Each structure stands twice: as C-alpha cells, then as structure tokens.
Image 1 (cartoon, rainbow, N blue to C red):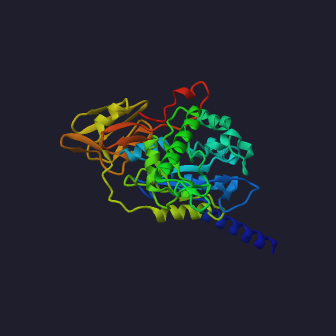
Image 2: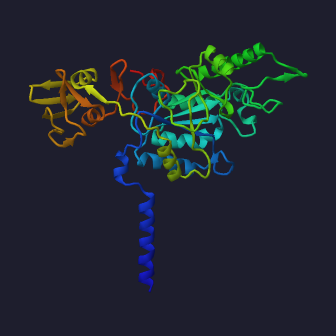
Image 3: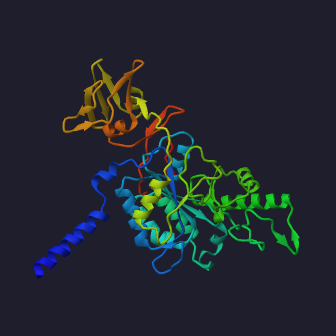
Length: 393
C-alpha cells in the first residue's frame, strides 16, 4: 500500500513537472518575428501587496520561464535601432520599470544582473532630492548610477520630473489644464509647463549615465498631442504608453505600446500566453544577407570555388556545397534551415543560419545594409563603463 502510494505521488510530481518545465525544443520555437514585446513592471517587493506589485520570486520565475521558452531580451538601444530598420532576435522582449521604486534596485536588479537581462528604469526625477521621503521609497542617484555603470544593459529614462500626479479635475497632469487660485492655465501656459517639466527630467538624469536621455514613459500611460509635441521639442524621441500591444516599426515613436507583466496574478505561463496572443501577423520578409559581404564586415572571410564554400570567423571554419543545407567543421555538423544559394552572382544565406554558423547573434539593418555583432550583456567595472556606448556598431 505504501509503495503504491509513493509511486502515485512520484508520478504526480513528474507529471506536474512536465507541465511546468519547458521542453528543450521550446528554446528554438519562434513565437513571433520582427516585433518586440515591451513589458511593464512597477514594484517588486516580497511584503508589499497591490495590483501592480509582484514578488521577487514571481519576477524571477517569469524571466526564467520566458528564457526557457526561447525569448530574447534586448536593450532600449537595440529597440531604437530596430525602429530605425535593424533586425531583432525572434521573440524579442524589452523590460521596463515605471516610477523608480527602490525595490527595483533591491529586488529586481539582482535578478537582472545575474541573468544579464536588459532593462529600462523610468524615473520621476523630483524624487531624487529625497528618495526615501516618498510613500514608497525611491531609488537614489547613487543606486541609479551604479546600475547604469555596473552593466552595459541597464539604463535610466524619464517618467516626468513633477507631473506624475492628477489635477483637481481628476485629469492627468500631462493632459489636463491646471487651475491655480481659481484660474485655469492657458494653452500656452500648459505647453510651457510640459516643456519645462520634460527639460527638467532630462537635466536631472543626464549626469547619471553616458547614454542620451531621450525617452519617456507617460504617467498613467496617457499624453495629449500637444504634450507629446512639447516632449519632442525638449529633445525626446520616444514615448511609451500602456496600450497593450506588440511594438512594431509602424508604431508612432511617441506612442509606443507596452504589455503589463507586473501584476500578481500574471503567472509565467499566463504571460507567455499573452505574448503569443498579442503577436502581430506580418508578411515574413526575407531575412537573408549576402554571405561574403556580411562575413567580411564581421571580420571573417569566405572562399568560393563555384561548387563549395568555406566560411571562416574567429576560430570557426565551416564548409559545404552551394545549394546545400549541410555545413561541416572539424568537430560538428550544422543543418541550416535553408540552403546557401547564389542569386545574381552573389552567395546568399539566411540571417539566422549565418548566426548558427558564426556562433553569435548579429544585427542587420536592411535599409542601410549595415551588419554588426549584437552586443553581449556584460557586467562592467566603473573604470571600463565609460567605454559603454549602448551597443551601436
């Protein structure tokens, strides 16, 4: 009886594990392509509770689950390059945090640093004067500086300076007209207030990192058209909302959508399901490059005798026949998804196949023909962080 009970219990545990642990094949599954899921979080805390607070365990579980399912996390700089025409990995994800709570530094940053997950902090910069004096403690200048200098994948951007609030009318400060002593501000005064607030936010954050401060996440996810125009005049080029959609190159740069991931009822499985459902059906544009030119730009070389081709890059050498999907090295065989072929006299290879042969991810901009190694997330020291330029080629 005891043995049967133990066997049943083991079967139940293994069965449950099979449901929770992604298979190895999932890591190579394409859930979507040429689009980005921008995730929104707020408070990561193990005691506080709210509809926008999750525990550090749930945050870690979400990230690990997405990694196991084959998602690729990108930096804000890579996202900007994508909007300008560059490629991103399949299943691309950008992680963002609103409000600048200290819990991001104490509870989320250790996970981001350990797993090398890029992220953006959207900061309410008026809190920098007294970060521990806010109702929920905020991050200090020192903490923000440390994150942006210890890594090449964490950066800080604006969540306004002093406009994360509601007016007496109930409208968001970025949208409504403020009333002072019974007098409502004029349109010109409104535009001046928004412009000055945007400029103050950028001025407060710029000393804390080398990267430009040119991105805002709007409080409550909303902005008036005039307000967005004022942010643009103040030097901002990108604005994030809370419209729950995937981000594509068609997105208005000042109205970029984001998907909420920071609620306690969003399990890792539910988040994965949400991203699959939000994926945008798009025509699959050819993701092929001219082989010789691409490898040459990446510092390698290609030799072609008309029948076969050899690709050399760093310590990797692969050879195969033109028109074949099978390429061999001295120690391994790689089966490509498409054959290497010749088009208009040029050898052509699929971008993902090129990455498999080279053993590293690359970024390719179809509009410019530029190709370069994708920046690898690194933990930096304060001495070498000054050379960090955000992954530009």
